[in-house]
Length: 276
Ligand code: NAP
Image (cartoon, rainbow, N blue to C red; front, side, top):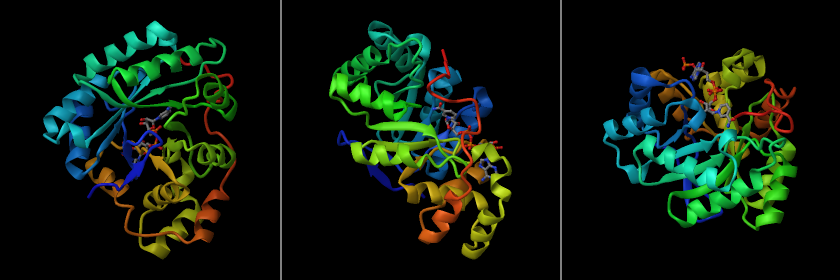
């Protein structure tokens, strides 16, 4: 089973669900990623700051899946903001991944106090021209940060990866993305397995569809039009998470899940959060 594809504003496409790889490091991490690729995952979400780009490259190589069939997504850390720094950083990612290109590269956080994300974006545009990366996007950018990028460079990010789960459905942010042609990706789509999966609204809908609570939450993301990247180290949970493309939630079910909204779960307000 593989996820259907979603078109991006630059003509490329991404699977509608991918594997989060935060904490999938070293040998165990490689094994978990190989299992995911063998189960049909075709997108791996890494970052310089996860310290596992080598592991992602090794998993891809070991799985035997054709390189062209897998979207490798990585992210540029705050310490590498700046024009020259960005190009050097992407070269480093390519080396660690052992790849000739990255499918989607994201600015990990805007780091507004550093105030170099516009120059960083100009370098990302260059990296795309050079063929180092095929698509470029951002992560944790607010509507204000996106507006500034677009106004100052004329290039709309293909993707914005943000915290998004039923406790934080990001309605206004998603509406802005839709207007601009930016694809939303959901990080921590399962709210890191907090009490979310035991919420009665989720468990009742799961029972009605004869699905697991996790599948219902991931299907909710897909129906919102966002690409979830659940992380799991376990092959059977990975398969469970990918198996969400053959059932549909009714609109009132989608709305009921969105009704769990209560706000961000972590200290990750992009206006103030600095991640180097
Ligand atoms: P998550 O995917 O919401 O939750 C992961 C947790 O859920 C793990 O403890 C996992 O345990 C568990 N889990 C997964 N599938 C399950 C299932 N079917 N049943 C029960 N439990 C299940 O959280 P996340 O790892 O924070 O977010 C996902 C990815 O988003 C990350 O890996 C990373 O790639 C990305 N991310 C990006 C940013 C950013 O700033 N851009 C920030 C945070 C995360 P097991 O591994 O034991 O299955």
